[in-house]
Image (cartoon, rainbow, N blue to C red; front, side, top):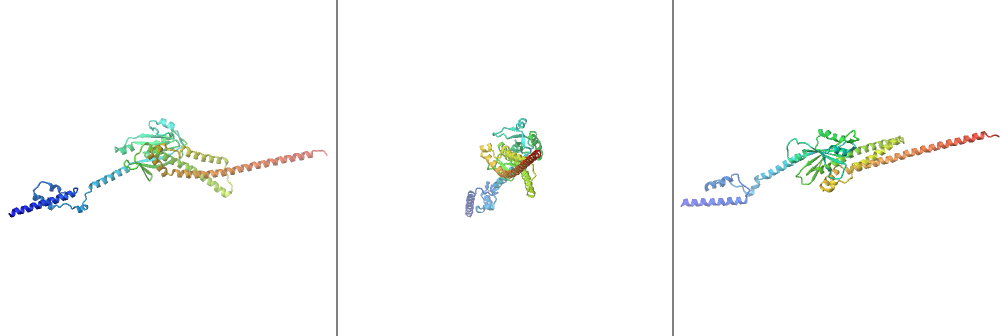
Length: 375
């Protein structure tokens, strides 16, 4: 009888333990002890009781003390690795201004196999694409970027190279020099960079000396090349106008000391022609204020264009150039008036001398006639 009661008490304890275990398991289905497999095996009730009592299940009120977020950690780690990989996809961009004019028609005829057909009616530039075998196998991002090298050539003398290393620049620029006129003694250069991130939420994102694009295509290359080409050409014209401003500054300082100047009329006319030609090249050839058809058709290209023009301060720099040209124009008008006054004074003195000679001749004739008359 005593044994039967003891067995009944043990059975009730086992049932109560199983109920408590099931209750905790339903409340916390994601929290599992590393020894849960041992509990779930088919064993006798007495062994199950000992294992359950020896390995208590974590309380739901202290779940924060246990680390059950390994899956989230792996996702963050993968995201960081992807972001790091995307940051390494960088395309160098180099802009050059090496001449004052390029014969695009002949250049396109000799390099027709590399020419990408134009997508707009603009005829002041062409795009050449060169295929280069990749150095190593990689993902689709690396293949799209590293297999091709682009060169955008503008009629006014700028060339923009994409994905070309420094030691390869001369090889590509030689193609431009063969059809160039007015080669500059010192070539101007500017560096930029493009990063391509397909997982970027926006179409583009700006950075210091680089731009991040969601997708780099030929139209993006045309837009970026146009702004960089205009910027490097604008630097050249600004330097030309700065030289003229400095020359007029020297003339003004000399006039301040001596009260006169010794510039020849021919030299002044040369300065007038140089100032007018520079202004015409900036407005007509470079086309700073021409509308881009690519940006007009698609808003994302318009965003890239506006960002780069703001980044390179194209409008502000042209404003400074225009201000300097007005200073040069003002000095030219002043010097022209001075030279004109000098010429007028010379003509007046010539007239005075001629009148004086005429008077002398008249007096001489009167005296001679009066001396030869008989009394």
